[in-house]
Length: 163
Image (cartoon, rainbow, N blue to C red):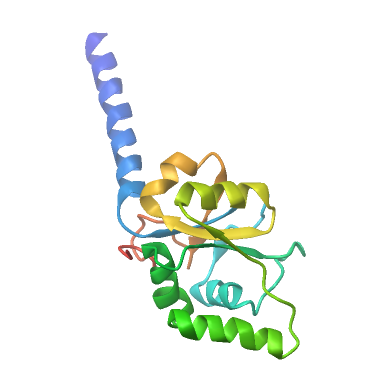
């Protein structure tokens, strides 16, 4: 009986360590409101969302981008890996859309992963990028979305190791 309890304890601890390792590796996670039906996005879809080319989710809710402050590693990674523009180019792109007559893109700024998660949790149409290491602390507030069919920590995740 003691061996079974010991073995079961070992398995539970090992599973917990594996789960923590999955989320604590480097990289960026994409989060949305828990009520959002979206489970997976491609890198191309993420880019369109960040550029304001897509303004509504499939359920017609308006997209609100919750961006980290421009000096953060998360923001720099999103600009280089997802948007593929410099900060100045991105600002010009967004301003030019308004000059073309498009509606202004809704963007909120958060100064931490926790504040980004709180903003996403408070607004049904929100999307944000956070450091993967923050996911265990915010998992009850938001939903992590797959990118190109992969979650952070899975082989081939496109935002893995991005810092």
